[in-house]
Length: 299
Image 1 (tube, rainbow, N blue to C red):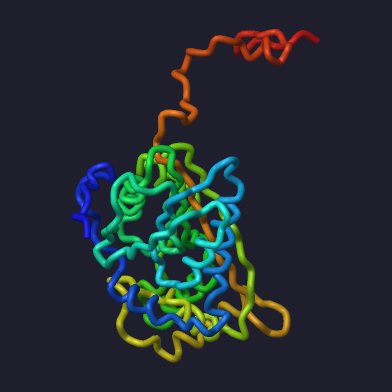
Image 2 (cartoon, helix red, strand yellow):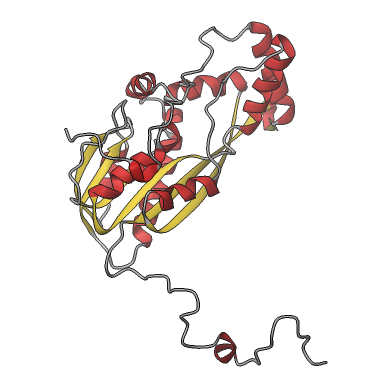
């Protein structure tokens, strides 16, 4: 395994660990794979990655790396894509170190794991360093609007029953903040897209059971280890059902999947010009008359 990389480009010292990565990895390892309902988020994320590969014109990726997300659906789907050649899988350890050779890959994919990274910029930096010049990086994870109503219901119910709040659901980044991670990691031509998935459950308890089956249950270091009190849980379920009703007495739930794409810097990529270096006037290109700011057009 390679030595932990120098992540000084990510801003210096490592931030305090937000997630219990060892716990999360253990949960991902025992996901309820035979249950189709425990796979739909991964399947949607995989489809988004494959679509983005298909949209890259005139490119193939002879050597690709999949940063293993603890879901065996990913490797076969990625390896079967006609533009992907040899595929190597790499675990993201509890310490968030990637055993990938520098400059060895045309494509690096982080599969539905970004929202569980203690240092997402550091992870993306390691992936960027594993790419050849002009190699493609794709990373995906849950976005900030995911399960917003459930989070609000739990917070309101806990405040009403205990007079306080404890971390119940992991924080998730907004799309703009997640897109900025690519620039901080030194990637060129960064793009952040979001896909929203609307679904429904028999009740809030069914939703919580499915989150556990997905390996997406609370793994915060600061989580409350005590089980949810019956009164708190009942109140939260009632609030959730009232605010997000669905047909047939069910409750609605929304997930956001954010997909990030960026390129390792390369000599043949388009480069932004220095401000003021233009050799042609926009007014000439548009066939209009250029006027100083503040001048009114003739009537």
